[in-house]
Image 1 (cartoon, rainbow, N blue to C red):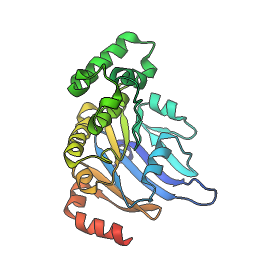
Image 2: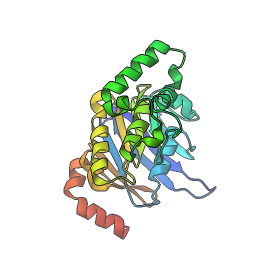
Image 3: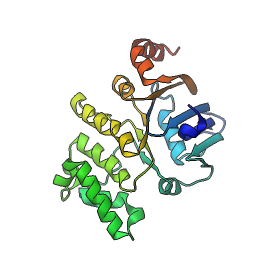
Image 4: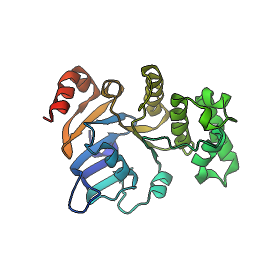
Length: 244
């Protein structure tokens, strides 16, 4: 994959929370336009940390994050969102005491002064996610786990992002609900949204991916196609468990 094909290009990234201790060292990663890229790895490998850094919630100590041809150094998260980058954290990013529509309008805060555009985007979201349209007036507290995850993604889609960062989208869900969430995410590239996904549900996440990165011990240990990882999933999991 060439640099021109990549909507997101991470090069030589070093990230940490404590001075002098890097969780990630010299990370190179690309997310190709219109594709699903997945990051896997053992607990504590720094996968979520990487997403936070890409979105600007955690500064990089070294290296670069290039998005849509622009270096994101010192670019605040709200500006990255305005530029077309969306982030769905591991824990629910919805407001439980707000209705579905109020949550969606909150996600479309950038459109708050453009009422016709906001309404058009709401109509598109409701058409895309009928389960949300049917419940638009109820509070988020009444939604199931899968519906909450759908709402979290839809809330970010209101402003038509080019890149969606997702952290553990299936955490705590039953296999059936998780499959519904994965089907929703797999459809995003056909709607113009590139996906960068972190997930512990390795088998299912890899199966829907075009490209996969295995991160461990602070760096990228393996990179390949989703097909290669699927065909070699037993060996990959064994390496993760053994720390190889």
